[in-house]
Length: 214
Ligand SMILES: C[S@@+](CC[C@H](N)C(=O)[O-])C[C@H]1O[C@@H](n2cnc3c(N)ncnc32)[C@H](O)[C@@H]1O
Image (cartoon, rainbow, N blue to C red; front, side):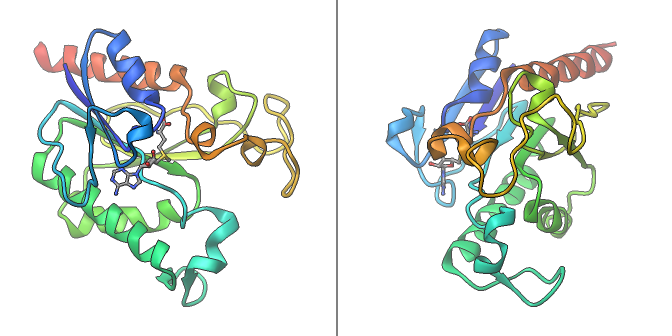
């Protein structure tokens, strides 16, 4: 199966995809990640494939930075920084690519916060209505941290696994402490996604493929 890991960073998705016998094209702006294509997705079209994954940067979408990047009162999310304007531009580009290529399966991931408020309307604006928000917590996939994360996706049947605040499956991480996602040393590590999570996603894709063969 042809797959793509867009905004690949440490290639969390690509590593699992290749392990499962697929081909995977990786794309990132930064050459330090050694992607197959080193380009700005605003100017480069990764093209067609069966399953395309997107991990757009969350710089302006996290809880900690809402006040710095957004204005307009509760739920308005009017961008007030260049970073927020760029964040919106990138989300629009991702929706444009999904609408153009009609990937059979796609996932777009971001930490649970502003992304889930903005991206559904952006998708609808591009005529995409067949999608769900699947929230997962990384502790359910072998990580010590909870990191609630939203995947917006069209993968049939996939519900993901999540726990709740205060559960003992993850280390406690009050705001400002050195644990949880905020305790991870650099942005590179903070962007990593558990391989068990992508294995679960591929299980559902393979199941859907089997059903469409019959
Ligand atoms: C949240 S990280 C992705 C982490 C990745 N999922 C992983 O497994 O490590 C976002 C990535 O998007 C890349 N990026 C940011 N802006 C981009 C752009 N305009 N085009 C392509 N890649 C971009 C960054 O270099 C960064 O590696």
